[in-house]
Image (cartoon, rainbow, N blue to C red):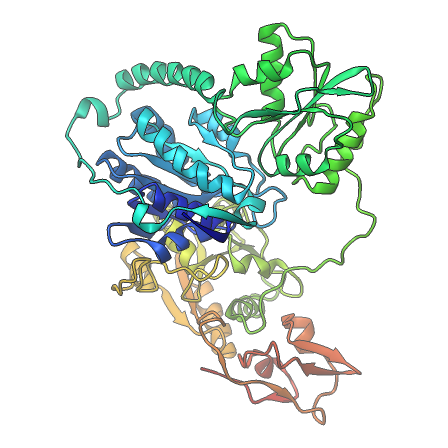
Length: 610
């Protein structure tokens, strides 16, 4: 053993390697991304790792390897679990042979997501056991125990870290590489009565799952991850109170406790199957319990049910009673305030405010496209080309979602990955006189966009598909995808050609253009959009991280008249109005030359990209 200072995601990766993981598949998404990248960095020769084209593919790849007896891991964020839910729901009925851990990083806030969904609730719904770490070091331990539970019970198991655990750092004891578990998978053994899902098998296995989870509830009540602190549980000489908590909220609770109050604390580390015996022990002799958790009232509802089943007269408070905020992430300050109110409360107290506003509001920093981002040029070309037309611009998940910000204002809808293509089709069927555009990134095109294009072509929709190809998965950290010609194993492979895929579907009008050649891009949009049926424009220009400036643009103050057209129409953060003129922040400029092409007075020049 040795000590390392690790990020939570790094700890999860090293814990999986120490547990003998052999196949890791996932799709990048903050806050989960670093788990797979850390596995790839430290893997041994017998470990295979891939960025799959989406989470559904990752789940199925890992399941196949687990069928053959290998220990496998899937990585994704909470919205990615939605994509993988189709195979997962059936996989829980089928089961696995090798241990299979599904790391789903939840994002309370949300900080970088569309939703605040709670994987603990998904675990209850899918009947899959879930581990809920409260710190990076605990995540390291939990992932190893999750593999053991999975393999022993023949079921996939969730590990549910949240953003603050994923991206928090801690010193911890790490197993040496020469002590990592190694085992040779048995291989796939044909048995259609086990591996082929039919209604008869599902009925039988469902009953087994329910019995198993009932047994696990009892077993997990004795787990080191479910425990009780401060046995006294008495406050102000009258009420006996307790606090039930989980995850990072346990850390906030622990740091907020007044030792003079001695509230009894229940820490739940395996919220499903719920450790009922441990909960009953905690509730004995208490008058009130405050549940502090993120995001859903999972513990709160479970304790209410336990009180009902066991006839315990304990008032359970939390999100359902307004004592804890019903949404958003907890913070040390909000938890401390909630505990202070709870400890000093009387039963007659009414709570409508669950979270105190901070005394000082931090300045807002709205997200924008990077200076020189080719997506800005793509959006601006379409905007200019379609000026005065009745249009809808259906967006997608990625850097280019930021095209919604003014002055571009070019994203009218954004639902989930790949949905822009199909939402545009729905609008067309209701308003056939609307010129429908659907924007999708190159990585998202492979992840979930192709299906929508096939649907549009088959159902004869008038639609202009705009593929924003910047040759990477930029928003989550520049991971490779099928269009880059690289794999996560470091192999150089034949890149999948997006234009060839579109022509293979049946599209006859597919044009590729560099959006930074502005006038050509505008003309291309006008020409392609006028064609009937499904047609496509591929705006191809590398992300600025991949294409550094060779020379940066400069403003000639003698020619600049201060019209600020470049600022008003492009919104590039490198363009700064100053003293009636415009200057270019050289620390941000990438030499993309878009502002040079937009300036009506030729006052900007000199830019060039590698």
